[in-house]
Image (tube, rainbow, N blue to C red):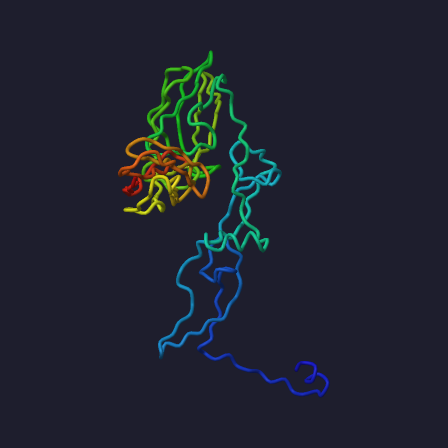
Length: 315
């Protein structure tokens, strides 16, 4: 069309935009209201108050996020990462149901592994021994470590959100007694974000006011998993001699990370399964009724028990 206008020297005619078509700046991909993290684009929306219809977004974007990355290793940065390698990068956090597609089509996604920490030795004068770096924690966490020096004055224990916290919150009181493998504080993780990474910091002060610091990063998970015993079905009947075994299959789910599933028969643990599809077999020995269930554990140690089923083994 443009070629014909130029060729035939046709006059240019303007097409006024209808008042019902408005232009707004939104976040790319999500189409939601902009934040500091998202790349912005201009889009057209239909707005007609007489109908009424308004297709403009009203929700602020929550998909684009700024992540500190160790670009030298390609992992999530921590306080132990070399500063020259740490960059704040922007990523689109694809919803869980679209992540497989995003990976298959090569979409740019944030790292999932945390940078290897330069953790102190358990024999270091200042260190956090427990919980270990990159651990999963829940509930009230006992923090143990070392804080000792010839010029020791005091130490304090803090925590902050993320791998490079901007704000530190003190755990307990400042301590003036040194020691090795001592209880430094009890950290109550209830109320913190499930699945989020937090960093613990112990900071020792010497008599000359110099500091020595140690860090560990952990993931908080206070939400227990769910689990159902999918096989066998309640009320199932098996015949001894015809059926050699009873298949057991559990369907666990967790908001962060599953660890393993235990299978129980009449109060005794049959076996534990650490990998999907979480199945086991019980070899039929005697006739009678048997009660079966499963217990699921997540990486932080939270657990949940399935409903119980009763099966019958006939002679």
